[in-house]
Image: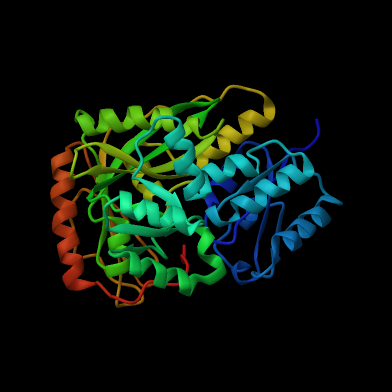
Length: 399
């Protein structure tokens, strides 16, 4: 039998469990990353090869690099481990006629304008939006839709770059600053409310696993104003869990995914009490959300993503492992100290301590959702007092 090989591409240090699971499945993984991550925490012992490239290559140059790698080694599948690599990997798949999501489908999970348009056409509630392309369209939109509005980058993977617009004149000023980049943005009605995220596994066009969690403060607010990031499992007997589980089960495949993992976000409108779709990504959630999901359900999304890909390669059905039903919550912030000491937090429910430069973080787990909620609220306040550092938001995500 011919050896099975995957080429995994990542310009951020993540996806180690995906690589390990591939190796456990008997698939030989090669990692293509950027030069500055050559010494990163990669599972070198299971990699067939670790190749690096300059971080500023164009898509065409990356395509040339991968085509050169193919001359000596045939890869059965290509995987983008980070969101920012999805478009180039989709282009590579189409160029080499390799199975997997192509450019148009990836856009539904990467481009906020594409995903909103497709979701709206499929009957999902989305905040009223318009493309930033024709100025008459923009004037009509602002006349018709009451402000404030959000000017959002179409392809960023976080709340970076979002501007809150209160008056039409604010928009024109921002568009002048953006110049030729303005068409890579969209304008959307600001909907006040609480934000939830649903992390799921899709197999053969059906959501076979999902878990619903709720952010403490909206990620956009934490990103722009600073503060402590928190999220916790929603009570499984609540209407919120039921409604969001049903919404996500229809949404994730409606955008075109056949198999993989998703991280979707929804807002519960304070004004009308309904859930609106905000965005969805074909990846594992960041900010230690994968660890949170694993603590609350027993499901490691990185490993299950690799198992799904291995099953597809071999033409066998994917079987979801047993799911546990606990509750978990995480508390995370930028810290003043390089390696903050969280040992003073001693609750027996603490199951994970974040070990990341200039970050303080904990994950708690319990069978009681109220206990998790109380600990997250208590610890988030304590983190403000003991660890929290503030700084301007970065120009682009750092993880």
